Amino acid sequence: MGRIANVTNGAVSGKVGPVVYYEMKGKAYVRAAMMPRAKGSWSAEQTGVRKKVSQVAAIWRQLDKNPVKEIWARAAEQMSAYNLFLKTNLPAFKGEEMQADPEFFHLTAGALPLPHHLNAEVLEGNTTKWQVSWKDDSGYQLSQAEDELMVIFAHDGKFTHPVATGAHRSQEKALIQVPAEIKNLQGIHLFFAAAKRGIYSADQFFGVER
Image (cartoon, rainbow, N blue to C red; front, side):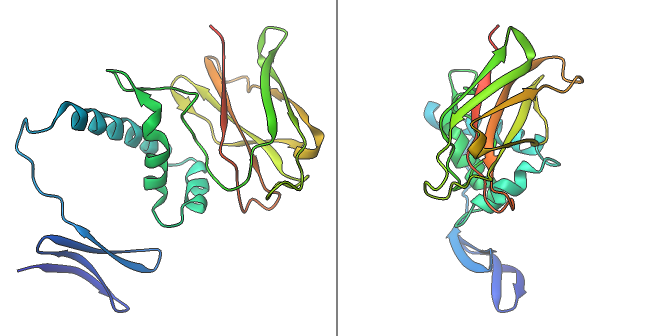
């Protein structure tokens, strides 16, 4: 006999035989229930995918108190914020150790376009200061002159909360100062936010040369 876990406003959730009913964003869905697998029955490819999922999930948990989760929630439409984060970042993990390639790993997502020719360089060999430049493309798609450049600092395998730089898309440049408390900077993730913070862009990573 199947068991219904919850009934709210006519929506049903829970497992019934081989299917699972659930609700997301006010809509009802159904999917096949996960079937138990015998130990050792995973193929090499399946094992690799499981490792990728485990790595992405660990980073998602690390972001529990980080506002970037709200950015993913805003970007997600037909799936949860976590599932969008997972789908976006699985391709970034490669190799036997399934380590993320920073060039393909994203901390933000959204419909706002990144400006053309976005670039960031360490200023005069001093990793505490970064010169950022781009081309103003205000009016292209959703881009607006008031969109603000945001930065997330990657250090010691961790990520800071998003920091507003005060520079707008129309300015075409910005100077970013790394906070004094960050001692082992690995790189910066740059992205743009609409003036009213309704939408965001995906980020682009710029690493520290070792």
